[in-house]
Length: 295
Image (tube, rainbow, N blue to C red; front, side, top):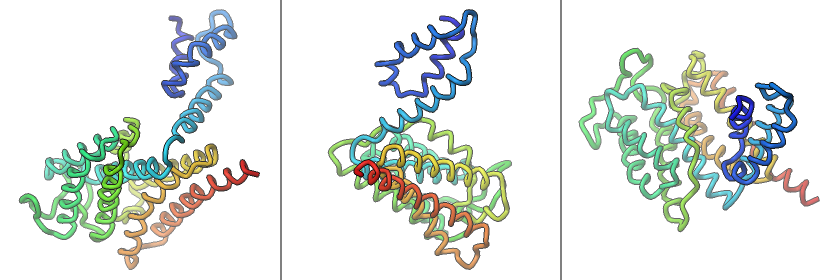
């Protein structure tokens, strides 16, 4: 295998596995036939369309099955990722609950809602206990402070119990709905795990936005990037599943806003307003695209 072929194969990984199995060799032959003698790097005019085409194909392929089921599952994944990121800086103090949260996320990613449900339920009860200052389920010493070099307040020490309770309740109720269906939801990419260290230590109440901490900035950028992706996917496929996931993610944020309205500043309201705006766009574009197709 030449260097150029290896690099083309790497670019073709942007396409889903099934597409590569059916058309990958044929596409690779065309690319290699058009290459110049001794060429080692794919030209930019080919590399960019390959990656963009792969992403488009993945999005179109993902728009299969009941939209509400897939959207609900995707929203649960996003909320579980954020909840795990909140717990990560407190690993030494609550290793059992961090481990259960990791297990729940892995099971949800693999499309196993029935197995994830009792574990997520236990985590939800414990989170609620910590927010209310109660040592339920074990003798966790409250308040729980971050480990080592991590900086920040006690776990769920800002805001109040409504925001975390809303997020965990949505996860549990969503898993109940998914578990009662005959078919399992699809598996999700392991790339979701990469978001956990990126937003680790995020304030679940979102009150670190004003301070402009690196974690808060990364979280906002990641949120807006994913919401832009949801809007693009909805426009491309005229499918609302990504908007459903975005709406599920927005609900706990709105609960935090309502609970902590007296503490919020302009930056917090601007953050919430951006989430509402991009979620609304993601919800509107599938119907506009479907209307254009029908017309």
